[in-house]
Length: 212
Image: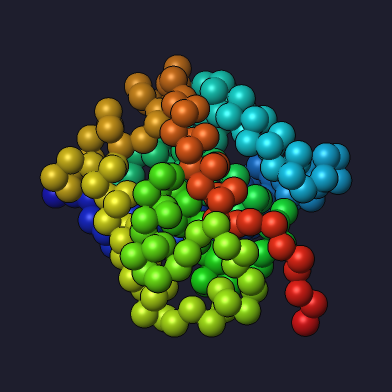
């Protein structure tokens, strides 16, 4: 079926969204640009809170989502409002990671960004993989995570999002995203995105970037 949702399809969407979050879409700031803007204006901690607040406010306007939806084309058959919300959330998480001193180009850090998208479930997913959230995740510790651990986390994240996005593997628009009724005139579920933002803040705790 064309609308069949699988873990692999979810992972494709995540990879696409992450690339766009870092490189940008036409007329949209990248995660790097947002991180720099809010850090300069408010500092790291206050800047993160301001970033989250303004992103939630922007996403609540149908005009913003309509414009974004018109720009997004996926290599996977996923509705525009789904890809729009994922892009917004992933860019926000990546910005938080950058502001806290993490290198978002690392595959390991990318995995932690994906885990944040599961909200409250992120802590359990990481704990099951042997990673304790709430401790300072040193750069070297993240980089030393074995490939098998990263693979396990990615698989758990993909499965969690697949079951969240769909019902029995088939796209169900009412449950799939925190945006109901399509891109135009949709009501953005700020609560869901706030949970995701809180997960990102818990995972990407403050640290001093290490010089290489």
